Amino acid sequence: MKHSYFMLHLAVLCLGLSGVFGKLISLNEGILTWYRVFLAATILFFILKWYKIPTDFTFKEKLHIAKNGLLLTASWLLFYASIKYSNISIGVICYCMASFFTAIFAPMINKAKFRLSEILLSGLTLCGIALIFHFDTSHQLGIVLGIISPAFASLYAINNERLTKKYNAICINYYQMVGGALGLACLLPFYIQHYPISTFIPNVLDILYLIILSLCSTVGVYLAFTEILKKISAFTLNLSLNLEPIYAILIAFLFLNEAKELNLSFYAGLFLVVSSVLLQYWISSKKSA
Image (cartoon, rainbow, N blue to C red; front, side, top):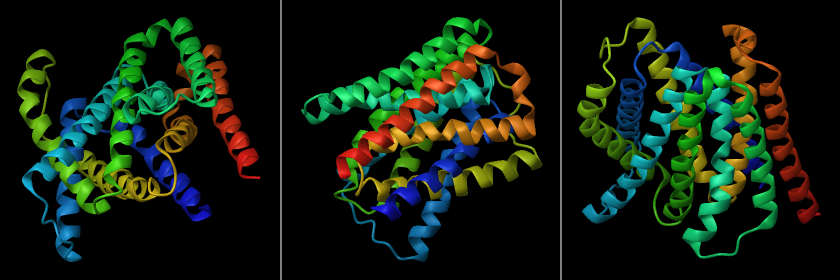
């Protein structure tokens, strides 16, 4: 179990870089997301071939797994849109709403009882984001997009928790990335019609960032999450993801000078979000004692 928690936090640290790359890469959020899932699918394809992992699933099974990839792709698209319309700090803080949506969706989907502790802890995160939204009017569009993103991420994690009990982790992620790439490719013409873009082709620096993003912050992270979900719950995973903004914000402050864009209400909201994480760890340790 300790190994699973160590891997979880290492993965969250790598995931924190995905928001930073979202700001650094000059492409539109739709094109950026498509390149991310396409490159991830390509990397996973070669991993499957290299290790000779069998992929003899039925078409129905492949389709079922791929559909879950659409949820993740939608989450990424909205996440990057949030960052493009606001900044890294706002985008990653809003993503913390995943634990709130999981606390609501998981009992409904799994037909289980609602857990009061999960609702209260997630409510603390919600209060933090509401505080930022109310006082920071300059980033409200980014905040709205950022709040919708983790709803899709939550549904993805809940469904993935079931898939990990039946299928190989690499196969799951491969078909999910393929599903996301194909699904987004079908939607991009309509997306571009409403949100025109200047270029489809990434520059040299964008290509470097996209490769790192796809290899480290996508394939590595989500393979780790898929394995971790065999030992811990989707709620614990999503709540631990609340640490992602801390890593991302520190990087944004140190290297992108984002601190000047944020006001006191942001830091008050961040305090509430971090408090929800610390309280969850305290409650978990009391239960295991």
